[in-house]
Image 1: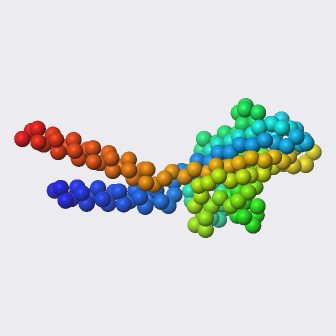
Image 2: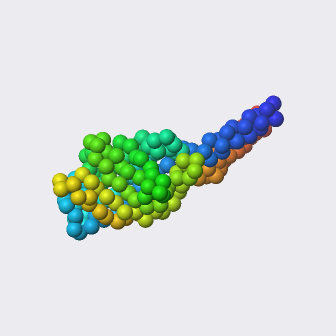
Image 3: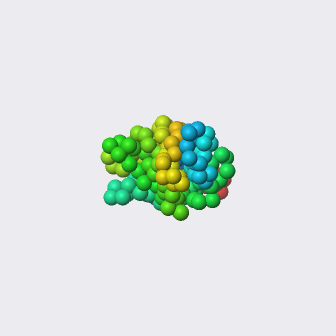
Length: 183
């Protein structure tokens, strides 16, 4: 009976390692400052205003559209939350200026340009990416520009695996002690 439990535990751990290695929820955040000489619409960009955002998206991304649905998406301008939530994000390869577009529920797009943030399997790559920002929702139609960075954090499979092993070992020890006390 013990061999069956150990085999089942090993199979479960192997499954968890495999699923964690190929995808999962990825957290992406970024911040920067809009340039001083920009048109101000006051909602998504303003002269010298700091911007920041954060969201979660599933990895790998869809290879056909390179678009992912966003959860917990927030965008801030001058430290104030913009009421228009980030709905989706569209990623771009390096030959299309890299990084991604933040697609807001209203249809407004804020683009971030920089290095490509995904591999050939469309898995997002953890890292720190310098970025150029662009808001094309201005009244004059001229794009507003800024600079900043993007941080992509991918959960580390070994941390998750260590947690699973610790819980399994603790449960096994507790059961073993109960059996010894009962005897």
